[in-house]
Length: 503
Image (cartoon, rainbow, N blue to C red):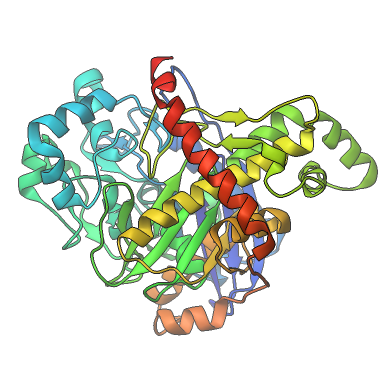
């Protein structure tokens, strides 16, 4: 009996594999890590073949570890990080490592296109300003700087569509990932032949567009051999990780909002109307006829991973001794520090910054240090800085008329009660927390479940699978101090912006 659905989540630092039953319970899960390459300043790359190698091995290991027969998998859904530019040749070979969403090498190309075509003309079509982190300029970077790659390229794929291709041999582009290309018409959800011509991107490089829940193909014999999946298992187009995570926490109606706490941070506000602002990000939701007005930041859960890696040697050793994780211990010392971190303010611009400032030169900054400050101040200020970036995006979204009443948290940072409460206090929004570690994969399997007919529609799927574990409400006593620190946060960037650019 085909009773399970398998979700593949292609993150920045690792993939997650999760197998769910119809009620959204995790039956099995696995994780595999791969590399991020930083060959030059501004260059941030990954190897899609490493993704596939790790993902296929992790699927096989997970099936074996949990004694799940491949024939029990009814369908596969894949979600992935945004703004890849995976160059594929006629034989399906990957021609080069892909620049990922943190890569900013193509800033000069963006500047030129914004002058030649016009910022407004591009924005009016795509619903997004042209920035180097998007896919568009990465394709043109290949054309100008790697002609030997560009000449052999027959298709440009996104992260999830590449894994779908490795599973099925079908080339596809899901609608929610279309926002990475500025020849994608955000009004209609189709490629614009005219903008393709003006940008210099051949229409033939772009795959056909599918809704995320559409079955695009079946697992092939070669994919089955390396992954352990059954030949013929249906695979849907899948979607953007932020969109699938938004679905996985139950956001399917206008005004409902996901708060993202993975490697990157941000928000995704569901809207039933085209609503664009050049300071934010607009994509299609994986739910048909809905858009997502998004804020996307470089500083999310990755800030704490960086801090733990570089400064938590003591917590790692102490954690081993007492049976706690280093992150738990960092949370504990941060919890002993007053709200507002006694004046320490952190700018979480650890790889430049995306929305709403769009500044590739922005840098991370700790401000307000003196001899009284402790490691706990650094940890709490890091959490608060990420929350300030969240508030900044929410304020811009509110200016467009997007009303947000509640946030639904997802990603690893949602496991921190302290961090989630800080976000609630700083944004002055209640936060509901469904199971956060597997929410994105759950969104991917909901798409698969609808595609294969396990769920009749999105309403039924969310009602069956999404459950809230806990709730946070804003602490009014902290509002005044956080309001002052937020103004410092904004002032720091304004005052340091030119200095950052000069370095």
